[in-house]
Length: 245
Image 1 (spheres, rainbow, N blue to C red):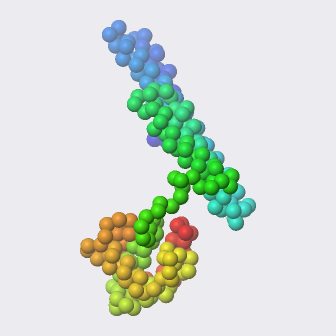
Image 2: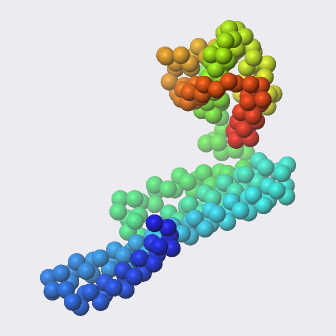
């Protein structure tokens, strides 16, 4: 059911129920009145949700237009768009029909989003990052973020694919390392080597790989059985860079 159809049916039902109210037995009047109240509430919820989607859509359109004009300012423009989107969500939650919040959903539940918006706004204005935005300090090397782990899992899976084509383990790892573009190679603090790719394959691949984002990515990409040419690999890595890097 599309939005236009939904609104038409809702409006028709809202008009017909008061008429029906005059025809039902007295002991059914209460049920009809409750139905009318619920439909009114549903319409209100729809309007509030609709306002949120419109604000998010307008923000996205402005963001795309701004990026087209100032492509070199993407980090700053992304930050501005994120703040606007966050504020729209907070506004939606604050103005959502009261009964949707008071039923065990107090204001404090989404106050954390306001704190995030304020911290990002402070950062946009040139202030120092709030503690919540600073990297967590751990002993030794910090763990890779989920995105980086996922990319390592993909490269491990593509190494497997080259092995299925007949390459040896060493040849497949070397092929992946040699053909990985520099921008994607930033997932490692050091230049990607064949040995690294082998380590990712051993850690995240096979039947007993370490569970996590890298393992999930490995399993998904391991399903591809088509031949992996250099052009295919170039296209894959280009898409990964555009989407994630």
